[in-house]
Length: 147
Image (tube, rainbow, N blue to C red; front, side, top):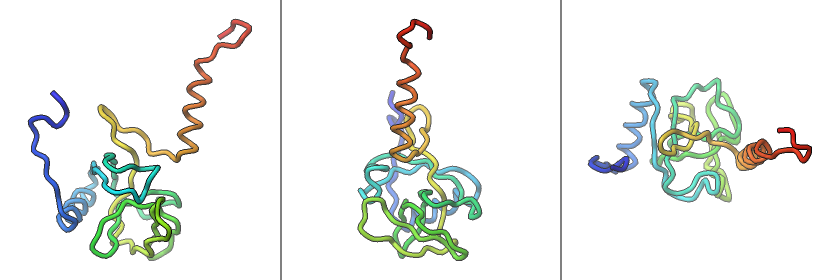
């Protein structure tokens, strides 16, 4: 039986999703979201599930992907500037930033892509390729015969 067989799947509109996300994350719980759109491609693809954790304003750094509300919409976009009053976010695949988002509208921070049966770290593409190269090199045996 697959992970969703026998389970009810709910689709939430932006307003309901905002309310649910704010409630879950404010309790200190993690949220698993299926993202839609290409604004963060290639780092995050349409249909991928992300793990979003509660936000700690003091720990948000440049490059973090945050769940935030811009106008009436929710976005998972990358932080390109951190200030006292909030952050500036920008989708990787977009031509221009979304603009300033106040701290009260930054709901959480994405910390991984969910893959059954466990979450994978959300890495930058260069970091992911470097990790793959290190894993491949560990499997190599030197020509001298010593592992």
